[in-house]
Image (cartoon, rainbow, N blue to C red; front, side):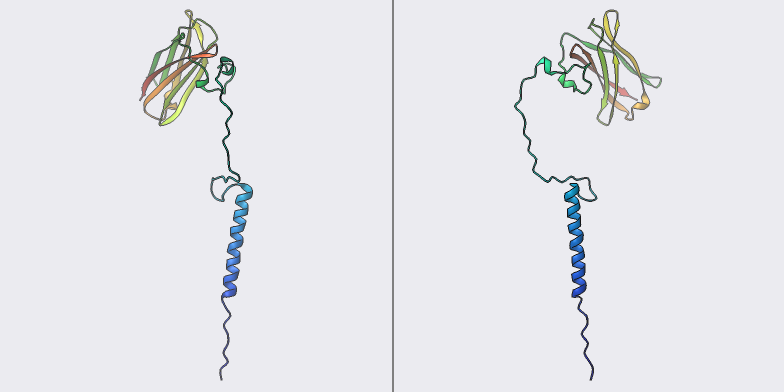
Length: 179
């Protein structure tokens, strides 16, 4: 007579594998919770709901607006445009491997700053900032020469000049085709 042997159940193996999977999942969740990041991604978890509480708005006064010379971290829209000051881009050209820029203003006051920004949606902006010089009783910006290698995109660019003086600005724009 043959003896019937019971085969060991695979239940033990399935139970051990299941426990290992649960342990890995729990460890991953604990890691994500404590570091506030999901593993293998840049996504940040929020552990509490965020609320956007804004303070009551007040009208800005001239004292609230930082000076262009005093605060380098302000944005251009925080400096009011002075319509009594005009800026004119006199030269914006490309030749001999450089872009040449020069502008004048009608301001007879020394001490202003000139900020030139050349922008194109397909490339990073090219900027220059300099002190304005007094020339024939008007503030002059430049001449500035920018190597054409700084422009990785060939095509139309917009030059924006911002002339800052006495907590105000004058703005002029002009287009140039970089070849």
